[in-house]
Length: 492
Figure 1: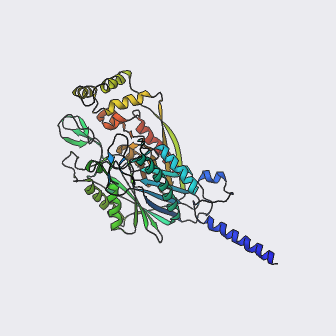
Figure 2: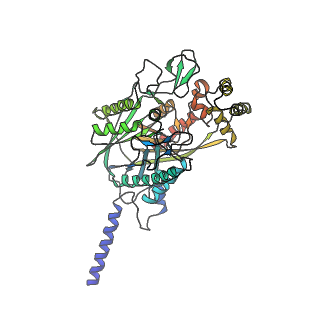
Figure 3: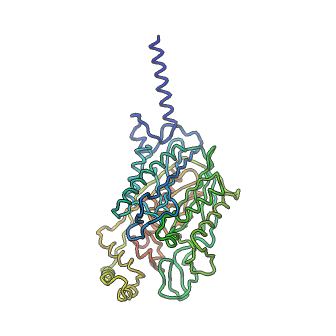
């Protein structure tokens, strides 16, 4: 009789232990019963969907501990810390599937490093690689994961950052809490600008490409996307998670503090919002790469800001106005849907004559009068152009692999583009999306530099076109691919 009772007690203890393990979605499980099918599908079998959508949040410090450290090849070195940088992870769970979305205060995260981090996260949490989106804010004041400089500081920081991102994933999953979704938008009039300007003399110029002409800028070459998207995940018994998506290139702080580490405008956006709303935890996602209208905006009629701090705090005020408006729309939540594909983009191949011109320019002394005259003659604004021509024509490859990803739940969708997208292409995706709210995350899943809109190739040119490896028209083709992906997510 005693033996029977002991057997019953032991059986109950084992059952309770299994139940306890199964109540935490996405956490490691030593059980050998999990099938490979479950692991690859991303379905966490521990808890049935209870009709409540869950959101978790974590933010971990990834500030380099060894200084100096290089940002990336060819750029200035970080010698001091103005403010810390972070990796932020939001976890989503619908009772069956777990997805993770990261935003990190870095210039870039290469595709190889994204893949390595995903593998580490899967090992620690059982969340499959395809369920993890990694986005960099493209902050020029921060290092790059994938920095080619073989220095001790870079190696140590890279390894520590990967481990910290795994930690953020685990903490976000552990933080999963029932949530509802509110969505709103604000207008950043006078702040979000495209990168090119039409001058009085009919030529074009831009922030990173000073015109040879002294003519004044009269207008932007296209309408700026001055809409900021705001999502509030309202959680029961915990702070809310506020996700922000805005179209801007975070490259202002590095011009003011070339040797300092800072999260750029993200530092002020996070700080100002969380200070004014003590029930908010902020995650900032950089969208299409327009350019903030700072002190370098050459159009007098548009509002200027003295510094990136001023513009950042102005943006935070717009976001707070949305959060406090009482007009945010309730969005339906779950189930989570994920789509991934690899798009083969056409590589830009130049004529033999153009390649010869590029080699002719690069053969001259850098910065010499002869080289400057030849650049002007052949239509380049800097040596970036001829260097890119030589680079893209050196390879026998004719296509570029572009990893595309999409994530949706209910009326909200994210698309992850591993390159810098032009504003008007970002607008086209949002207008073609079947979802009420669509967040565009650029420099997500890789760092393939610029994919320009067709007008840049045919009309106003600039730094982005001079540097790209993508053939004209690929920007619009990828817009169509993302819209198709969003439609698939909507009908899955």
